[in-house]
Image (tube, rainbow, N blue to C red; front, side):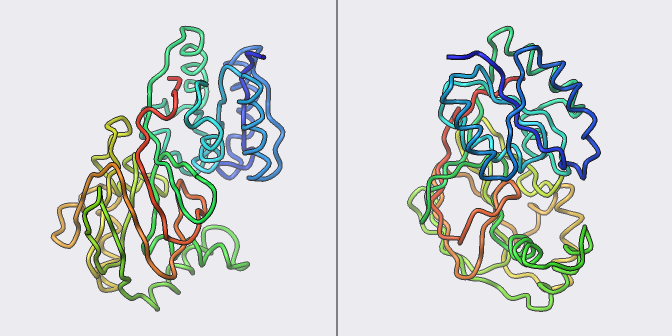
Length: 294
């Protein structure tokens, strides 16, 4: 058994702008911090699982939501500390659980909490579907935004943010309402629309407040759905998503539930910005599933 701190870092997170901070983060975490070796998403998860099995005192994710998502698969439901150092393009989970925005300050807070034996229980969403159990901490997207992500990931040109801009235009051109089978705590809420999100935290996509009142420690998942929008109305919704005021639109409905069943043909869901799989998913809020060091 070891009491080291296992550190999962993504040097390309935040488009590389935090690369030089890693040595400072490791120094703040203390002499027990060791960097995990990982060259892909799958190897990152394997390294985190191995560290937890070895009895580390904590796993610390240095990066954005994608890096955190990988680490969560290993720490969920285990008596191990979990630290978050926001250093990505999108840091929605870190913002949702109240971590300092400065990476060095966050590393210092993690180290202090570990020294003092102090942690905060934070909920996660457990996902049961056709494949193995998965977990997410922030938001699952299953509407127009998920379609854009899936298209952008299939594209090889152009590179960078313009690829997503082009994917948005292409998906807008084929925009159509989708039918969703939605069940909340055993009650049917199926609907036809273009937007659905489920989560524990308020924002996704680097600050869009899709679930503005979500609380990652209330034992519930927030669910937002939207009735059909036209192309112009959907485009106008974006600024309201940034502020979280879209929930006052009569075409938007917000629910809270412990258990969410969500299905729709032809949509691949994304959670914490990562590809999860076809939208035929059973989601349950797992209260206090992670021991957050802050």
